Image (cartoon, rainbow, N blue to C red; front, side, top):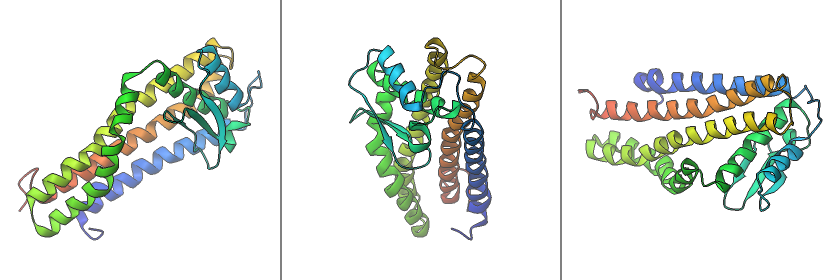
Length: 230
């Protein structure tokens, strides 16, 4: 497949360009605004905890974690994990990322439907990501449309998971943007930088969904299930 020109032109190059651009924008915005502190001086951990307290959420722990931009909220353990560059930093970028994750915790507490749907799709997406891709490859080697079709159905679970993830991430970002100003964590002027960081981060999820869609379309076209390829 590495030497399949269709794969290179349809999947590999577009996927690398889209993902690379999204990743570059996130790192560029985060690095820029990680050097600009907020006037109030709250750290990422303090800002996240403040939003949780305001929302009446007392069963979520804000904890540090290792890794660059590895911040996440785990609804199972109810832990809001913030990376080293976010947890103890009072920068605009750190506060934005931390409050975005707090937005997920608030979604969980308020039973935000897309978040629950995403959690329910995790097992299916895991199967589709590994097995579905291999089944599609096997179907091409076997020249079996039926096998490719089965793999495509499994792999579609990944795309469905990523599509459901989009409103979850966009909503968490929207909550963070609104709540930080309402809570006085950042000034409206400071929120401009925070918006740039969070908007760039949101694009990475769009890029992932597009890359998955391109991969799925390639296999469907390559096998003849989509179009009339000989």
